[in-house]
Structures are given as C-alpha cells and as structure tokens.
Amino acid sequence: MRPLFLLSLFAPAFALANEEGVNPKATDLTSFTVTIPVSNSILTTWILAAVIIIAIRVLVGTPKIIPSKGQALVESMASGLRDALEPIVGKSMIGKVFPTLCGFFIFILLMNWSGLLPGVGTIKYNAHGHWLDAIRPATSDLNTTLALSIISFVAWTYFVLRYAGFKVLIFDLFGNKADKKELSFPMWLMLSFIFLGVGGIEVVSIAFRLISLSFRLYGNVFGGENLIHALGNIARFVVPAVAGLLEVLVGLIQAFVFTLLSAVYIGLICNHEGGHDDEHAH
Image 1 (tube, rainbow, N blue to C red):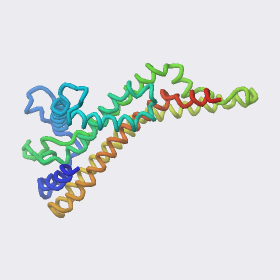
Image 2: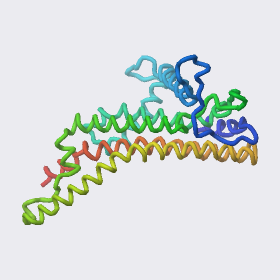
Image 3: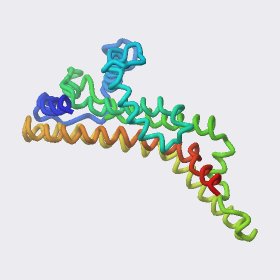
Image 4: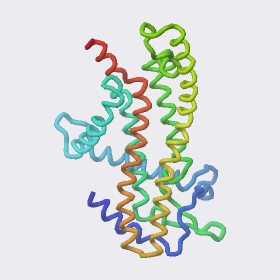
C-alpha cells in the first residue's frame, strides 16, 4: 500500500489548474495512428495490458515447484481471490470460471488505479485549439465498462449453458419450485402462473445487468476522476492527496464488486452443491 500512498500524494499534483475535469467523451487519437481508430482510453488499455503481461512474466517466469518470491506473491494473491469466490460458484465450478473472474478483477483494479499514476489524465495534446487528454483510465470511459459487462454476460451464458444446461436454466427462471405432493392441483397450477410471471421479470433483470454493471463501474471511476480534478483547483497537493487515498479504496471495492456480481450470477444457477448435500443428509 505504501507505493499507492506515494502515488496518491504526487499524481494529483500534476493536474492542470482551472481544468474542467475529465471529458465524458473519449478523445479520438486517430490522427496519430493514420487509419486505425484509437481513443485515449484504448491507448491506456493497451499500455496497462502490456504492463500486466510483462509484470507477470518477470515475477513468475517459468513456474517452479519451489516458488520464487515473485511466484509466491502472485500465487498468494490468486489463492486469496479464489478462496473468496469458491463458496459462491461452488467447488466444481471454481476451476472453470476462476481464470475469467481473476482476469476481471486484475484488469479492472489496475484500470481503476491507473488514474492515480502521474501523467494519466494530465498528459495533453493540442487538437484544433483545444487541449485534450492523451491517456485516461479506461474504466472512466463508458465504452470500456459496457464492453466488460458484455463479456461478463457472454461468460455467464456460456458457463450456465455449458455446465448447467438449457433445461436447468429454463426451470430456474420459469419452473414451479413448489412441492406438488404438498399442494392441491389448483394451488400448484396457480403457483405455476405466478412463477411464470416472476420468470419474465427475472429475464428483464438479467438483461438489465448490462446496464447495472457498466454504469456502476463507470459512475464511480468517472466521478472519482472528476473529484480529484475539481479538488486540485482548491489545494494543489493536500486535498487531492486525500481524495487519491479514497480512490485507492474505491478502485479496489469496485473491482471486487464487479467480479463478485459476475460470480454470483454464475453461482445462482451453476452452484447447486448445497442443495445436493441437503438431499443426501435427509
């Protein structure tokens, strides 16, 4: 945490005075890439993706039975995240879904924290008489958070259909969960219509996850970036440093919330281990 603390102290000091804040629209950098459409958030994504790959290769290298300090650090972090997610998705599913969930957490966490790095959000270039951000945190761009939500939705669809099956999904959404032996037929039939209606609401809820996941992450990161810029006009060092420390915590929480919700959505249908255990106990 000490390096992050130092970054939170010095990164806000680079903010330009009287700045309007972070532009909600991505800056088009196409003029620098001739034909390939590239925005400032995409450029930041590429840079940090390269940093992640290089850092893992340097820390881990070739995995060994007796791990090096770097490999032990990476393995301990991965084990901690795995232990937190395993009760949600189940022991039978954690090995299958963990690479995806771990990728979400690491990518989003570093993107959230990237706004505290010197230069991110403060390196400018002049386009048509206006100074625009050359790089910015990717998660402060709604395009990025929406893309992450779409990937999460596609992953949920794949894991549910692959490991639970279409019949389980339909029954979980629309099936009558009441015990037919304990109810009269008219009551059971009435409950069937109720569960059918609830299933329709659940389908809308599932579709709305694309909005809820993307806007929650985008709103928190974008709001935090603008808060640091606004406070920089009040006091160049002390006040933005305090906001930077807050953003360290917010960035961690939002990365974990996105990953946790993705795990919950998968576990709600794929994790039936508890139910099976209860049946065997009876």
